[in-house]
Length: 351
Image (cartoon, rainbow, N blue to C red; front, side, top):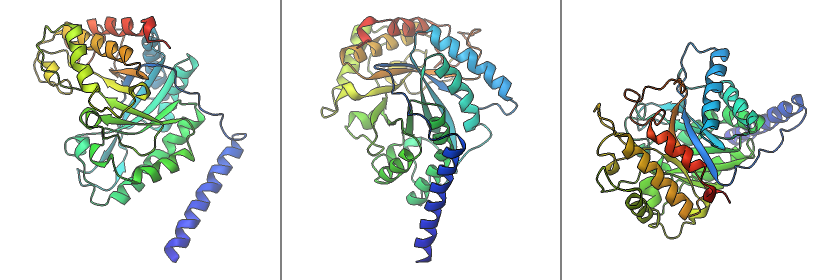
C-alpha cells in the first residue's frame, strides 16, 4: 500500500509540476507542426565538446543550418548520445558528450526559424553498450524503461516548447523493440510531447516485418541493407536490389515509412556491408553517390514518407571539408553531396 501511495503521490506531483510550468509560460505550448510530406532531411550527429559555450554552439548551429538549407532539405534530424554500463545495465544516463536540452534548443530554434522541420533522436552509444545497441539485455527491463523515461523527460519538454515536429523514442534497439513496455513509455511521452512519435527499426528487423516501439505514429528504418554487387554497380541495379529488401515485409505500408538513415562509407566494398567501414584510407566517392541515388529512386518509386541522409557531424566545419581525410561516412565536399542535392530537387518526390 505504501508503494501504491508513493506512486500516486509521485504522479500527482509530476502533474502539478507540469501545470505550474505551463502556467509560468503563459499556458501550454502550441501544438507541434506536423512533419513535411515527404520528409527530405539530413541527419546531424552531435557529441558535445566540453568547452563549447552557448555562443560557440550557436555559431556551429548557424553553420549547420545554412548548409542543410543549401542542400535543399526541408527537415533536420538531431541524433545525440546517451549511455549505459554494458549490455546488461538497467540504467541509462548522460555524459559530458551528451548535449543538454538547452544545447539542443539552440540548434532547434535556428532550424525552425529557417523553416526546417526538426526530429529529435536519442541514440544509445554502442561502446558504452558493450557492442551493438540492438543486442542489449538489461538485467531489469522494467527499471531500464523507467530510467530511459526519466532521461527523456527534459528533452521531451524542450521539444514541446520549441516546436519540434517529431521525436524518435528509440533507434535500432532490436532486442527491446517488441517489449510491451514501449506502450507505457509512449503514453507517458505523449503527456509531455504532442508531436509525432517515431521508432527507428534496424534494417534486418524491418525486413523481417518486426516493427518496434509500441503504438508510435511513424515507423522508420535505418536502411543499411547489404547488397551483393560490385563497386561499379549501376544506380539501376542498386535500386533493384534495394527494392527486393523493401518488398520483403509485405504487410508494411511503405508509404507511411520514413528511411531515418541512409548512409554508406565511401570505401571500396561497402555495398556488401553499408553499416560498417574499415580503417582503409581508400575512398570511392562514386560508390557512395550511386548508393544515395539508388535510395532516392526507391523512395520515389515506393512513394515513401521521406528519407534522411546520414550524416553531418555537428562539430565539423561543413564549409571547409577535407574529402580525402574526413570520416568515410561523410558526404560533405564529395559526389554524395551533389547526389543529395539532386535528390531533394527531384519534383517527383513532392506530393
